[in-house]
Image (cartoon, rainbow, N blue to C red):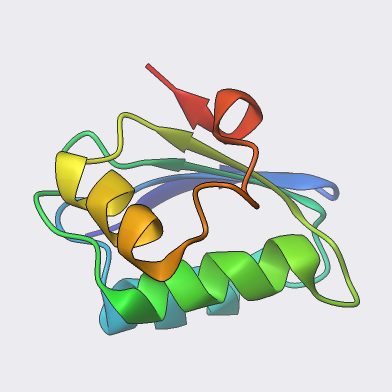
Length: 97
C-alpha cells in the first residue's frame, strides 16, 4: 500500500515497491493540482519507462511540477542514460540520497 502525506501545495509519497504503471496511476490520482512531488523509492528495485515518461511530463509539461526522488534504484539512472535524459534532467536537484 502506498503511503502519502499531502497538503495544498505538495505531496510526499512512499512507494512500497517498484515504480511502474500502477504506481503512476496511484500518484496521478493523489497529485491533483499540487506543484511539489517527492517520491521515496528506497523500496523500489525497478523503475519502468512509463514512470520515467510520467516524471518527464510533470517536470517539462505545461503545469510544471517540482519532482524530488529519494534513493532511486540503479536502474533508474541506466534508463535515463539510455533515453538521453540524464543531460536534460537536473539530477543534482531531483535526486536525494
